[in-house]
Image (cartoon, rainbow, N blue to C red; front, side):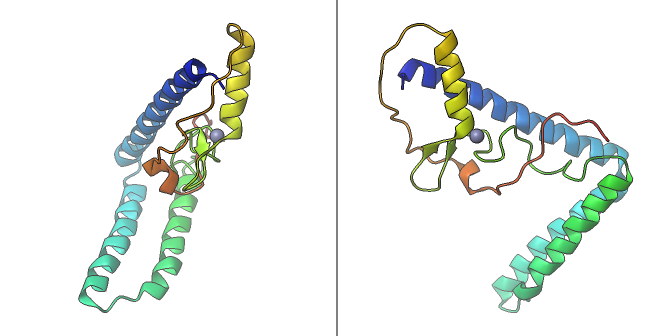
Length: 160
Ligand SMILES: [Zn+2]
C-alpha cells in the first residue's frame, strides 16, 4: 500500500474523530440544556461508577451488582431518550464505523486495517495517481480508542 495515500487517510480519519468528538459534546450540551431529567440520570449513573470505585478502595464493594445496576441505568437513559423523541443511542460514542471506531484499525495488540480503511484506500487509489507499492508500516500505534467499547452511535440520524 502506498504511504502517501495512507498518510492522507490517517489525516482524514483523525479529522473524522475530531468531528465525532464535537458531535458528542454538542449532544451532551443539548441534553444538559433541554433535558434536565436525562442529565440527572446520567449524573446518577456516574455516581454509580465512582461510588463503587470508592467502596472498592474501602474494601467493601458490591461489584457483583454494579453491572446489573449499570445496565438498569443505561436502560433508563435509553428509554428516556426515546420518550423524548431522540434515538436511544444518542449519547453513545459517535462514529461512522462501529468496527474500528473511526481509527481505521482493528485489533488490540496487532493492528489490522479495518474494512472501511481498505475500502477508502481502494477508492483513493482508483481516483488518484499511478501505482507504487509500499508496505503498511504504521500498524503498531495503539490508540486509546481501541480500548473503548465496540459500539457507537451514527453521526447523522434524525429523531425518528
Ligand atoms: Zn472501520
